[in-house]
Image (cartoon, rainbow, N blue to C red; front, side):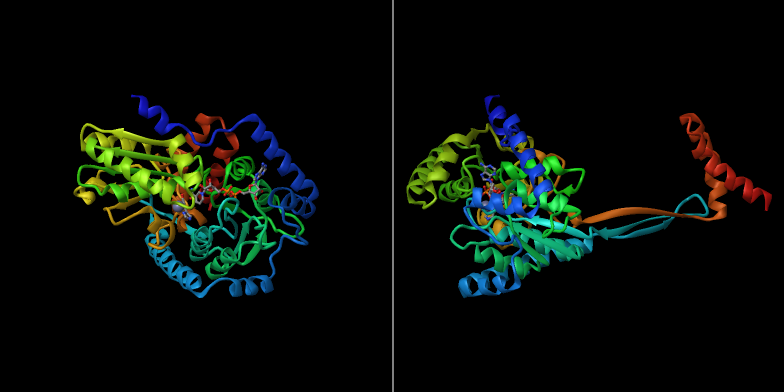
Length: 425
Ligand SMILES: NC(=O)c1ccc[n+]([C@@H]2O[C@H](COP(=O)([O-])OP(=O)(O)OC[C@H]3O[C@@H](n4cnc5c(N)ncnc54)[C@H](O)[C@@H]3O)[C@@H](O)[C@H]2O)c1
Ligand SMILES: N[C@H](CO)Cc1c[nH]c[nH+]1
Ligand SMILES: [Zn+2]
Protein backbone atom coordinates (compact mmCIF):
# COMPACT_ATOMS: atom_id res chain seq x y z
CA UNK A 1 0.00 0.00 0.00
CA UNK A 2 1.77 3.05 -1.36
CA UNK A 3 -0.24 5.54 0.66
CA UNK A 4 0.97 4.14 3.97
CA UNK A 5 4.55 5.24 3.48
CA UNK A 6 3.69 8.84 2.63
CA UNK A 7 0.91 9.17 5.21
CA UNK A 8 3.01 7.83 8.06
CA UNK A 9 6.32 9.46 7.09
CA UNK A 10 7.85 11.62 9.82
CA UNK A 11 7.41 15.31 9.02
CA UNK A 12 10.21 16.20 11.41
CA UNK A 13 13.43 14.43 10.56
CA UNK A 14 16.53 15.14 12.57
CA UNK A 15 19.70 15.73 10.67
CA UNK A 16 23.26 16.16 11.82
CA UNK A 17 23.40 19.81 10.77
CA UNK A 18 20.27 20.69 12.75
CA UNK A 19 21.50 18.76 15.80
CA UNK A 20 24.83 20.60 15.77
CA UNK A 21 23.32 24.02 15.09
CA UNK A 22 20.90 23.65 17.99
CA UNK A 23 23.46 22.23 20.41
CA UNK A 24 25.70 25.21 19.55
CA UNK A 25 22.86 27.61 20.39
CA UNK A 26 22.17 25.81 23.69
CA UNK A 27 25.86 25.85 24.67
CA UNK A 28 26.15 29.55 23.88
CA UNK A 29 23.06 30.41 25.91
CA UNK A 30 24.49 28.42 28.85
CA UNK A 31 27.80 30.25 28.54
CA UNK A 32 26.79 33.79 27.63
CA UNK A 33 23.21 33.95 28.99
CA UNK A 34 21.14 37.07 28.27
CA UNK A 35 23.78 38.54 26.00
CA UNK A 36 23.37 35.56 23.64
CA UNK A 37 19.54 35.82 23.71
CA UNK A 38 19.77 39.45 22.67
CA UNK A 39 22.30 38.64 19.95
CA UNK A 40 20.12 35.86 18.49
CA UNK A 41 16.99 38.06 18.56
CA UNK A 42 18.92 40.47 16.36
CA UNK A 43 20.15 37.67 14.07
CA UNK A 44 16.95 35.64 13.62
CA UNK A 45 14.12 38.03 14.47
CA UNK A 46 15.77 41.28 13.36
CA UNK A 47 14.81 42.99 16.59
CA UNK A 48 17.14 44.85 18.87
CA UNK A 49 16.27 44.34 22.54
CA UNK A 50 17.63 45.84 25.74
CA UNK A 51 16.26 42.98 27.76
CA UNK A 52 14.26 39.88 26.87
CA UNK A 53 11.98 40.50 29.85
CA UNK A 54 8.71 42.14 28.81
CA UNK A 55 7.65 44.74 31.35
CA UNK A 56 4.16 45.16 32.81
CA UNK A 57 4.11 48.57 31.13
CA UNK A 58 4.65 47.00 27.67
CA UNK A 59 1.81 44.56 28.34
CA UNK A 60 -0.45 47.47 29.31
CA UNK A 61 0.54 49.31 26.12
CA UNK A 62 -0.27 46.18 24.08
CA UNK A 63 -3.95 46.42 25.09
CA UNK A 64 -4.10 49.82 23.37
CA UNK A 65 -2.81 48.31 20.12
CA UNK A 66 -5.37 45.50 19.97
CA UNK A 67 -8.94 46.24 18.89
CA UNK A 68 -11.79 45.51 21.25
CA UNK A 69 -13.30 42.82 19.00
CA UNK A 70 -10.07 40.84 19.26
CA UNK A 71 -9.92 41.29 23.03
CA UNK A 72 -13.55 40.10 23.27
CA UNK A 73 -12.75 37.07 21.09
CA UNK A 74 -9.71 36.23 23.24
CA UNK A 75 -11.81 36.47 26.39
CA UNK A 76 -14.53 34.27 24.84
CA UNK A 77 -11.92 31.67 23.85
CA UNK A 78 -10.22 31.89 27.26
CA UNK A 79 -13.52 31.27 29.04
CA UNK A 80 -14.19 28.11 27.00
CA UNK A 81 -10.62 26.79 27.35
CA UNK A 82 -10.79 27.39 31.12
CA UNK A 83 -14.17 25.62 31.33
CA UNK A 84 -12.78 22.54 29.57
CA UNK A 85 -9.58 22.50 31.64
CA UNK A 86 -11.46 22.97 34.93
CA UNK A 87 -13.77 20.08 34.13
CA UNK A 88 -10.86 17.86 33.13
CA UNK A 89 -9.22 18.80 36.44
CA UNK A 90 -12.32 17.49 38.23
CA UNK A 91 -11.70 14.09 36.59
CA UNK A 92 -8.35 13.82 38.37
CA UNK A 93 -8.48 12.22 41.78
CA UNK A 94 -6.17 11.81 44.71
CA UNK A 95 -6.28 8.33 46.23
CA UNK A 96 -5.77 6.87 49.69
CA UNK A 97 -6.71 3.26 50.29
CA UNK A 98 -6.08 0.46 52.81
CA UNK A 99 -4.10 -2.34 51.21
CA UNK A 100 -5.39 -5.92 51.57
CA UNK A 101 -2.19 -6.38 53.60
CA UNK A 102 -3.16 -5.16 57.12
CA UNK A 103 -1.15 -2.18 58.34
CA UNK A 104 -0.40 -0.83 54.86
CA UNK A 105 -1.99 2.33 53.44
CA UNK A 106 -1.38 3.26 49.80
CA UNK A 107 -2.03 6.53 48.04
CA UNK A 108 -1.15 9.07 45.45
CA UNK A 109 -1.23 12.86 45.51
CA UNK A 110 -1.68 15.27 42.62
CA UNK A 111 1.17 17.74 42.78
CA UNK A 112 1.52 20.48 40.14
CA UNK A 113 5.04 21.29 38.90
CA UNK A 114 6.24 24.42 40.64
CA UNK A 115 7.35 26.36 37.62
CA UNK A 116 6.85 25.87 33.89
CA UNK A 117 7.73 27.55 30.63
CA UNK A 118 5.18 27.97 27.84
CA UNK A 119 6.63 28.36 24.36
CA UNK A 120 4.33 30.25 22.00
CA UNK A 121 5.46 30.08 18.35
CA UNK A 122 5.76 33.37 16.51
CA UNK A 123 7.96 32.99 13.46
CA UNK A 124 5.46 32.66 10.63
CA UNK A 125 2.23 33.85 12.30
CA UNK A 126 1.39 35.46 15.64
CA UNK A 127 -0.48 32.74 17.59
CA UNK A 128 -2.30 34.32 20.54
CA UNK A 129 -4.53 31.24 20.69
CA UNK A 130 -1.50 29.07 21.53
CA UNK A 131 -0.75 31.34 24.50
CA UNK A 132 -4.25 30.72 25.84
CA UNK A 133 -3.92 26.96 25.40
CA UNK A 134 -0.73 26.43 27.35
CA UNK A 135 -0.87 29.16 29.97
CA UNK A 136 -4.54 28.79 31.01
CA UNK A 137 -4.16 25.03 31.34
CA UNK A 138 -1.01 25.36 33.45
CA UNK A 139 -2.69 27.85 35.80
CA UNK A 140 -5.82 25.66 36.20
CA UNK A 141 -3.48 22.75 37.00
CA UNK A 142 -2.07 24.84 39.86
CA UNK A 143 1.36 25.80 38.50
CA UNK A 144 2.46 28.73 40.67
CA UNK A 145 4.74 30.37 38.18
CA UNK A 146 4.34 30.28 34.40
CA UNK A 147 6.96 31.91 32.18
CA UNK A 148 5.69 32.58 28.64
CA UNK A 149 8.17 32.95 25.77
CA UNK A 150 7.59 34.04 22.18
CA UNK A 151 9.92 35.46 19.52
CA UNK A 152 9.83 39.27 19.21
CA UNK A 153 8.08 40.54 16.06
CA UNK A 154 10.04 42.93 13.84
CA UNK A 155 7.13 45.36 13.42
CA UNK A 156 6.70 45.86 17.16
CA UNK A 157 10.21 45.46 18.58
CA UNK A 158 8.73 43.06 21.12
CA UNK A 159 6.15 40.24 21.13
CA UNK A 160 3.11 40.86 18.87
CA UNK A 161 0.55 42.85 20.96
CA UNK A 162 -2.28 40.32 20.46
CA UNK A 163 -0.01 37.59 21.83
CA UNK A 164 0.95 39.77 24.80
CA UNK A 165 -2.71 40.42 25.55
CA UNK A 166 -3.49 36.69 25.27
CA UNK A 167 -0.61 35.83 27.62
CA UNK A 168 -1.95 38.37 30.10
CA UNK A 169 -5.57 37.16 29.86
CA UNK A 170 -4.31 33.60 30.33
CA UNK A 171 -2.46 34.59 33.52
CA UNK A 172 1.23 34.33 32.57
CA UNK A 173 3.39 35.32 35.55
CA UNK A 174 6.41 36.39 33.48
CA UNK A 175 6.82 37.13 29.78
CA UNK A 176 10.03 36.93 27.73
CA UNK A 177 10.57 38.06 24.13
CA UNK A 178 12.72 35.17 23.09
CA UNK A 179 12.10 32.47 20.49
CA UNK A 180 13.64 29.45 18.81
CA UNK A 181 16.15 27.06 20.37
CA UNK A 182 17.53 29.89 22.50
CA UNK A 183 14.18 30.24 24.32
CA UNK A 184 14.19 26.54 25.17
CA UNK A 185 17.80 26.77 26.39
CA UNK A 186 17.00 29.80 28.57
CA UNK A 187 13.98 28.06 30.12
CA UNK A 188 15.92 24.84 30.69
CA UNK A 189 19.11 26.27 32.19
CA UNK A 190 18.19 29.81 33.22
CA UNK A 191 19.97 33.11 32.59
CA UNK A 192 20.31 36.20 34.80
CA UNK A 193 16.92 37.37 33.50
CA UNK A 194 15.06 34.10 32.87
CA UNK A 195 14.84 31.81 35.91
CA UNK A 196 14.91 28.15 34.89
CA UNK A 197 11.76 26.03 34.88
CA UNK A 198 10.91 22.38 35.64
CA UNK A 199 8.78 21.74 32.55
CA UNK A 200 8.56 23.25 29.06
CA UNK A 201 5.37 22.96 26.99
CA UNK A 202 4.26 24.23 23.61
CA UNK A 203 4.86 23.61 19.93
CA UNK A 204 7.38 25.24 17.63
CA UNK A 205 9.39 24.80 14.45
CA UNK A 206 12.24 22.30 13.92
CA UNK A 207 14.74 24.43 15.89
CA UNK A 208 12.42 24.58 18.89
CA UNK A 209 11.57 20.89 18.72
CA UNK A 210 15.20 19.81 18.37
CA UNK A 211 16.12 22.01 21.34
CA UNK A 212 13.35 20.40 23.43
CA UNK A 213 14.75 17.00 22.50
CA UNK A 214 18.25 18.03 23.58
CA UNK A 215 17.27 19.54 26.96
CA UNK A 216 14.97 16.67 27.90
CA UNK A 217 16.26 15.09 31.08
CA UNK A 218 17.54 18.38 32.47
CA UNK A 219 13.95 19.62 32.28
CA UNK A 220 10.61 17.96 31.46
CA UNK A 221 8.85 18.55 28.14
CA UNK A 222 5.31 17.92 26.95
CA UNK A 223 6.17 16.26 23.61
CA UNK A 224 8.17 16.63 20.42
CA UNK A 225 5.48 18.10 18.19
CA UNK A 226 5.93 18.37 14.45
CA UNK A 227 4.05 20.51 11.94
CA UNK A 228 0.26 20.44 12.06
CA UNK A 229 -1.74 17.61 10.50
CA UNK A 230 -5.33 16.90 9.52
CA UNK A 231 -7.04 13.79 8.24
CA UNK A 232 -10.61 14.08 6.98
CA UNK A 233 -12.93 11.09 6.62
CA UNK A 234 -15.52 11.69 3.88
CA UNK A 235 -18.10 9.78 1.86
CA UNK A 236 -20.79 10.50 -0.72
CA UNK A 237 -22.73 12.54 1.84
CA UNK A 238 -19.96 15.05 2.58
CA UNK A 239 -19.93 18.68 1.49
CA UNK A 240 -16.93 19.05 -0.88
CA UNK A 241 -16.49 22.75 -0.08
CA UNK A 242 -16.28 22.01 3.66
CA UNK A 243 -13.76 19.23 3.08
CA UNK A 244 -11.57 21.29 0.74
CA UNK A 245 -11.39 24.40 2.91
CA UNK A 246 -10.59 22.32 6.00
CA UNK A 247 -7.66 20.72 4.16
CA UNK A 248 -6.37 24.14 3.16
CA UNK A 249 -6.97 25.55 6.65
CA UNK A 250 -4.37 23.14 7.96
CA UNK A 251 -2.08 23.43 4.91
CA UNK A 252 -1.70 27.19 5.41
CA UNK A 253 0.12 26.64 8.72
CA UNK A 254 3.37 25.44 7.26
CA UNK A 255 4.74 24.03 3.99
CA UNK A 256 5.35 20.78 5.89
CA UNK A 257 1.80 20.40 7.20
CA UNK A 258 0.35 16.97 6.47
CA UNK A 259 -3.18 17.06 5.00
CA UNK A 260 -4.97 13.83 4.12
CA UNK A 261 -8.42 13.08 2.71
CA UNK A 262 -9.69 9.52 3.08
CA UNK A 263 -12.90 9.11 1.09
CA UNK A 264 -15.05 6.16 0.05
CA UNK A 265 -16.58 7.89 -2.98
CA UNK A 266 -14.77 8.65 -6.24
CA UNK A 267 -17.21 11.40 -7.31
CA UNK A 268 -16.82 13.14 -3.98
CA UNK A 269 -13.05 13.13 -4.43
CA UNK A 270 -13.45 14.85 -7.79
CA UNK A 271 -15.78 17.42 -6.28
CA UNK A 272 -13.29 18.11 -3.45
CA UNK A 273 -10.52 18.58 -6.02
CA UNK A 274 -12.64 21.18 -7.82
CA UNK A 275 -13.33 22.98 -4.56
CA UNK A 276 -9.61 22.93 -3.74
CA UNK A 277 -8.90 24.65 -7.06
CA UNK A 278 -11.59 27.24 -6.35
CA UNK A 279 -10.31 28.10 -2.86
CA UNK A 280 -6.60 27.96 -3.62
CA UNK A 281 -6.87 31.09 -5.74
CA UNK A 282 -8.88 32.94 -3.09
CA UNK A 283 -6.65 32.57 -0.06
CA UNK A 284 -4.29 35.30 1.12
CA UNK A 285 -2.14 32.47 2.44
CA UNK A 286 -2.29 30.50 -0.79
CA UNK A 287 1.47 30.48 -1.32
CA UNK A 288 2.07 28.33 1.75
CA UNK A 289 -1.24 26.45 1.54
CA UNK A 290 -0.82 25.48 -2.13
CA UNK A 291 2.82 24.51 -1.62
CA UNK A 292 1.94 22.44 1.41
CA UNK A 293 -0.97 20.69 -0.35
CA UNK A 294 1.21 20.02 -3.41
CA UNK A 295 4.10 18.57 -1.36
CA UNK A 296 2.30 16.92 1.54
CA UNK A 297 -1.38 16.63 0.60
CA UNK A 298 -2.79 13.19 -0.06
CA UNK A 299 -6.08 11.71 -1.21
CA UNK A 300 -6.82 8.07 -0.44
CA UNK A 301 -9.78 6.25 -1.97
CA UNK A 302 -11.01 3.64 0.50
CA UNK A 303 -13.13 0.68 -0.64
CA UNK A 304 -15.57 1.07 2.23
CA UNK A 305 -16.01 2.91 5.53
CA UNK A 306 -14.41 0.16 7.62
CA UNK A 307 -11.27 0.51 5.53
CA UNK A 308 -11.35 4.30 5.87
CA UNK A 309 -11.59 3.95 9.66
CA UNK A 310 -8.71 1.45 9.73
CA UNK A 311 -6.57 3.87 7.69
CA UNK A 312 -7.30 6.75 10.08
CA UNK A 313 -6.47 4.56 13.07
CA UNK A 314 -3.21 3.53 11.44
CA UNK A 315 -2.14 7.11 10.62
CA UNK A 316 -3.13 8.51 14.05
CA UNK A 317 -3.37 12.15 12.90
CA UNK A 318 -3.19 15.23 15.11
CA UNK A 319 -6.66 16.39 13.98
CA UNK A 320 -9.26 13.96 12.72
CA UNK A 321 -12.48 15.23 11.11
CA UNK A 322 -15.44 12.95 10.47
CA UNK A 323 -17.60 14.41 7.72
CA UNK A 324 -19.42 11.20 6.77
CA UNK A 325 -22.99 10.04 7.33
CA UNK A 326 -23.56 9.04 10.96
CA UNK A 327 -20.40 10.82 12.13
CA UNK A 328 -20.92 9.94 15.79
CA UNK A 329 -21.05 6.21 15.04
CA UNK A 330 -17.91 6.51 12.92
CA UNK A 331 -16.24 8.62 15.60
CA UNK A 332 -16.84 5.92 18.20
CA UNK A 333 -14.70 3.50 16.14
CA UNK A 334 -11.72 5.85 15.94
CA UNK A 335 -9.01 5.20 18.50
CA UNK A 336 -5.89 7.15 17.44
CA UNK A 337 -6.16 10.94 17.18
CA UNK A 338 -5.04 14.09 18.99
CA UNK A 339 -8.43 15.79 18.71
CA UNK A 340 -11.57 14.50 17.02
CA UNK A 341 -14.04 16.73 15.16
CA UNK A 342 -17.39 15.05 14.75
CA UNK A 343 -19.83 16.18 12.06
CA UNK A 344 -19.64 18.47 9.06
CA UNK A 345 -20.10 21.57 11.22
CA UNK A 346 -17.00 20.89 13.30
CA UNK A 347 -13.99 22.32 11.44
CA UNK A 348 -10.59 22.14 13.16
CA UNK A 349 -10.65 25.95 13.39
CA UNK A 350 -13.16 25.69 16.26
CA UNK A 351 -10.74 23.52 18.24
CA UNK A 352 -7.85 25.77 17.28
CA UNK A 353 -9.53 28.80 18.77
CA UNK A 354 -12.79 28.66 20.63
CA UNK A 355 -14.51 25.37 21.40
CA UNK A 356 -12.38 24.87 24.51
CA UNK A 357 -10.37 21.71 23.74
CA UNK A 358 -6.61 22.20 23.69
CA UNK A 359 -4.91 22.67 20.32
CA UNK A 360 -1.42 21.60 21.44
CA UNK A 361 -1.66 18.05 20.20
CA UNK A 362 0.40 14.96 19.37
CA UNK A 363 1.66 14.73 15.77
CA UNK A 364 3.60 12.26 13.60
CA UNK A 365 1.65 9.21 14.75
CA UNK A 366 2.37 9.80 18.44
CA UNK A 367 -1.39 9.94 19.06
CA UNK A 368 -1.11 6.14 19.14
CA UNK A 369 0.29 6.44 22.66
CA UNK A 370 -0.07 10.04 23.83
CA UNK A 371 -2.47 12.94 24.16
CA UNK A 372 -2.46 16.69 23.87
CA UNK A 373 -1.62 19.22 26.55
CA UNK A 374 -4.13 19.12 29.41
CA UNK A 375 -4.11 19.78 33.15
CA UNK A 376 -2.52 16.36 33.68
CA UNK A 377 0.53 17.51 31.67
CA UNK A 378 1.41 19.85 34.54
CA UNK A 379 0.52 17.55 37.43
CA UNK A 380 2.61 14.78 38.92
CA UNK A 381 0.73 11.79 40.31
CA UNK A 382 3.16 11.08 43.13
CA UNK A 383 2.87 7.89 45.15
CA UNK A 384 3.09 7.22 48.88
CA UNK A 385 2.68 4.45 51.41
CA UNK A 386 2.27 4.50 55.16
CA UNK A 387 3.30 1.34 57.00
CA UNK A 388 2.61 0.50 60.62
CA UNK A 389 4.47 -2.06 62.77
CA UNK A 390 1.87 -4.64 61.77
CA UNK A 391 2.33 -3.75 58.08
CA UNK A 392 6.11 -4.04 58.45
CA UNK A 393 5.81 -7.58 59.78
CA UNK A 394 3.27 -8.51 57.09
CA UNK A 395 5.46 -7.30 54.20
CA UNK A 396 8.82 -8.38 55.55
CA UNK A 397 9.14 -12.00 54.50
CA UNK A 398 8.41 -11.58 50.77
CA UNK A 399 10.45 -8.40 50.68
CA UNK A 400 13.55 -10.03 52.20
CA UNK A 401 13.15 -13.00 49.85
CA UNK A 402 13.12 -10.79 46.74
CA UNK A 403 16.08 -8.74 48.02
CA UNK A 404 18.01 -11.98 48.42
CA UNK A 405 17.16 -13.12 44.86
CA UNK A 406 18.39 -9.79 43.52
CA UNK A 407 21.55 -9.93 45.65
CA UNK A 408 20.79 -6.57 47.23
CA UNK A 409 21.90 -7.26 50.74
CA UNK A 410 21.25 -3.86 52.32
CA UNK A 411 17.71 -3.88 50.96
CA UNK A 412 16.95 -7.08 52.84
CA UNK A 413 18.83 -5.91 55.91
CA UNK A 414 16.84 -2.62 56.03
CA UNK A 415 13.78 -4.78 56.66
CA UNK A 416 15.50 -7.38 58.86
CA UNK A 417 16.71 -4.78 61.40
CA UNK A 418 13.16 -3.51 61.81
CA UNK A 419 11.69 -6.98 62.17
CA UNK A 420 14.35 -7.81 64.78
CA UNK A 421 13.63 -4.60 66.68
CA UNK A 422 9.90 -5.37 66.70
CA UNK A 423 10.43 -8.99 67.75
CA UNK A 424 12.75 -7.93 70.60
CA UNK A 425 10.24 -5.47 72.03
N1 LIG B 1 1.15 20.98 17.12
C1 LIG B 1 0.64 22.10 17.59
O1 LIG B 1 -0.09 22.07 18.58
C2 LIG B 1 0.97 23.43 16.93
C3 LIG B 1 0.29 24.61 17.31
C4 LIG B 1 0.67 25.81 16.72
C5 LIG B 1 1.73 25.82 15.80
N2 LIG B 1 2.34 24.66 15.47
C6 LIG B 1 3.50 24.59 14.60
O2 LIG B 1 4.54 25.40 15.19
C7 LIG B 1 5.40 25.82 14.16
C8 LIG B 1 5.72 27.31 14.35
O3 LIG B 1 6.87 27.64 13.65
P1 LIG B 1 7.35 29.14 13.37
O4 LIG B 1 8.61 29.05 12.59
O5 LIG B 1 6.21 29.90 12.80
O6 LIG B 1 7.62 29.78 14.79
P2 LIG B 1 8.64 29.41 15.99
O7 LIG B 1 8.38 30.40 17.06
O8 LIG B 1 8.54 27.98 16.33
O9 LIG B 1 10.10 29.66 15.41
C9 LIG B 1 10.62 30.93 15.16
C10 LIG B 1 12.04 31.01 15.67
O10 LIG B 1 12.85 30.02 15.02
C11 LIG B 1 14.20 30.47 15.07
N3 LIG B 1 14.83 30.31 13.76
C12 LIG B 1 14.34 30.68 12.57
N4 LIG B 1 15.24 30.42 11.60
C13 LIG B 1 16.33 29.89 12.20
C14 LIG B 1 17.59 29.41 11.74
N5 LIG B 1 17.91 29.42 10.45
N6 LIG B 1 18.47 28.92 12.64
C15 LIG B 1 18.16 28.88 13.98
N7 LIG B 1 16.98 29.34 14.46
C16 LIG B 1 16.09 29.83 13.58
C17 LIG B 1 14.21 31.92 15.44
O11 LIG B 1 14.72 32.05 16.73
C18 LIG B 1 12.74 32.32 15.43
O12 LIG B 1 12.45 33.25 16.45
C19 LIG B 1 4.73 25.47 12.85
O13 LIG B 1 5.35 24.33 12.32
C20 LIG B 1 3.28 25.15 13.23
O14 LIG B 1 2.68 24.18 12.39
C21 LIG B 1 2.00 23.48 16.03
N1 LIG C 1 -3.82 24.09 14.17
C1 LIG C 1 -2.73 24.42 15.09
C2 LIG C 1 -2.36 23.17 15.87
O1 LIG C 1 -1.87 22.20 15.07
C3 LIG C 1 -3.06 25.43 16.13
C4 LIG C 1 -3.45 26.78 15.65
C5 LIG C 1 -3.15 27.97 16.20
N2 LIG C 1 -3.77 28.93 15.50
C6 LIG C 1 -4.42 28.35 14.55
N3 LIG C 1 -4.24 27.05 14.62
ZN1 LIG D 1 -4.62 25.72 13.00
